[in-house]
View 1: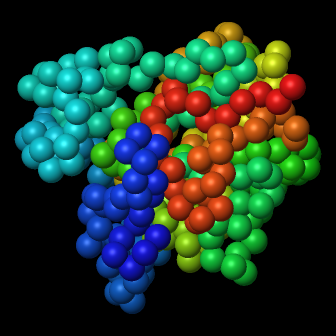
View 2: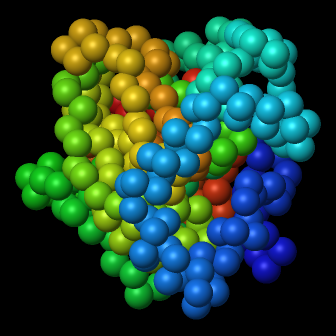
Length: 300
């Protein structure tokens, strides 16, 4: 990140780019202005605020926001299953489905794939997430998972934090084939997960509302997948069926309006993350990649 904005490395262009932040002036107000911080703690982080905003985005009149949003953020309309004039609300557009051709799933044997479109950070060890953020902040895997035994088991395994911006495709998918269990809810608040917020308060990750799903696989043992809600995302919607086998890249669910994030964590010694992901994360920079692209390889 630089003073000019949030920077990320785009896997497809090979360039460092600056993010177009939806509602950036408002975000900076609530994070850095004393009056904005009062609003953040009194109102913005509360579930009722996100639920109210989500309700607004479900109203039919909100459909008027779709076309300006598409044009301002250069959304690729040709990827959508629905045409722009077929959406019934802004939320209907926000968690839109894409054609299968738009997001092919990496079919290479032994690959694991990104679970969502977004900006990703990769860590060789889940217990070392704090290395990308401001020094002095300690990452608490036990609090994130809400389970001391799971935290101990996965502390030295590879992990990937995937941040979805409002401009991104907002359905999330399974990074591996396997047998998923139930999504366990850990209730919490709804702070923003934007880097502007996380760089000063890493604890947001384990204070926010989130779901934890354990996936049993043949090739990599158990895999953990978390969905983390954020400001204006009071709703995490799961579309998968627990205890039914899933394919790599199959849809798991979707987020309603706002920014949000997923966390994928592997057992130690099971997966080596992609070189560009590790290299950019070591530079404290996110990697932009799309759902279904290779996130790493299973270790022999």
